Each structure stands twice: as structure tokens, then as C-alpha cells.
Amino acid sequence: MEIHPPEKPIHSVKDFLVQLMTITVGILIALSLEGALEWSHHRALVSEAKENLRQEILDNKREIDKVLAGVPSLRKNEEAAIQFIGDLKAHRAKGRHELNYTYYFSVLSGTNWGTAQAAGAVAHMEYRDVQRYASIYDKQRKFDALQDRLNETVVAAMPSDDVDNSSPRELRDWKQRVQTSLAYLSTVEGLARSLRDEYDGALR
Image 1 (cartoon, rainbow, N blue to C red):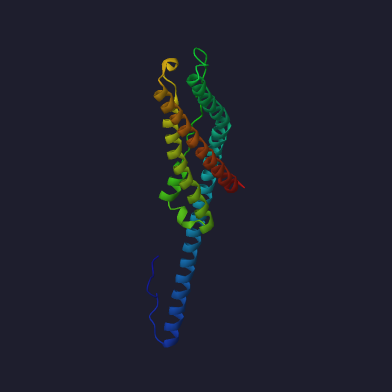
Image 2 (cartoon, rainbow, N blue to C red; image 1 turned 45 degrees about the vertical axis):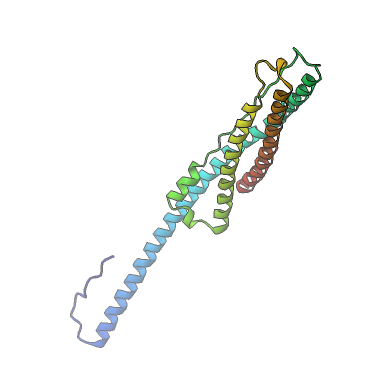
């Protein structure tokens, strides 16, 4: 914004006041226009960020739905493993077992939330919206960490190639690993349901 000196010399207090008023009005108009343009830019920035976040949350919800759909199968098979271990201890299961540890591990994205923060869109959002998004993505990080731990326990709970000849101690250790995996599975399921509820709230 540039301010130019008056074109005509000032000869009286009246001329001075007229020139001062003219300059003041001009400055106020310029500032108002600048503010309106900046407001419009921020509004567009927030609108674009929210749409990107909505799409990201929708994609993440699909991932969580797949996780929850796979939980019963893994639980059933790990419970079957515990039953099988009991049968092995009682010498009722030698040579007959089929355990399946297939499970869907989700890939949740947080890229658009990071982009919204870096672009400054978050600073212009309503406080309640920022709270909601921050809660969702914080819970996502916790879910990812917990899911990684579940993955480790599932791998550890898999039977050895020669389970029929396992010693009582090996069977006891295997059962403990399976029970640990089941505990993590229940925790992952609970957090997944909580996360899905938050996704639903953000998408409404």
C-alpha cells in the first residue's frame, strides 16, 4: 500500500483536515480490501484441507472396517491353537492340526493432517474441529503402534514345524504366547471400534 503526498499545497486547517480525512478513508478501504482477500484465502485453504481430511478419514475407515472384519477369524484360530495345545498335552492331537493365523493389518494415513498443519490451514480452523482431528490422528498413531505389537505377537504365537514332539515346557510357553496375542487382539479390536466411531463423527 502506497501513500502519496497531496497534489495541491495546503493553505488552511480546513484543507489539512480534508486531506487527512481523504488519506484515512483511503487507508481504511485498502485495509478492508486486503483483509477481505486474506479472509477469502484462509477460507479456501481451510475448505480444501477439510475435504482432503474427509477423504483421508474415509479411506482410513475402510481400513479399520477390514481390520474389524478379520478379528473374529484370528481369535477363533488362536483359541483353536490353545485347544490344540491342550490336546497335545493330553496326547489326543498327534498328527492332526490345521492352524491359520491370517489377519488383515491396516495401513492408516496421516499425510493430509500433516499437510494441513504445514500449510497453516489448521491455524484458521474452528477450535472444536482442530480438537476432533487432533484426537483422531493421535488415536491413529496409538493404533498403529498397538497393531505393530499385535503383529509381533501373532508371529510369535505361530507353531513350530514339529509341534507334535514339543516338550511340556515348550507347549506351556507356546500357550502363553498365544494368550498374549489374544490379549493384544482384544485391545486392538477395542481401539479400532473407538477409532471407527470417531471417524463416523468426523464424516457426519
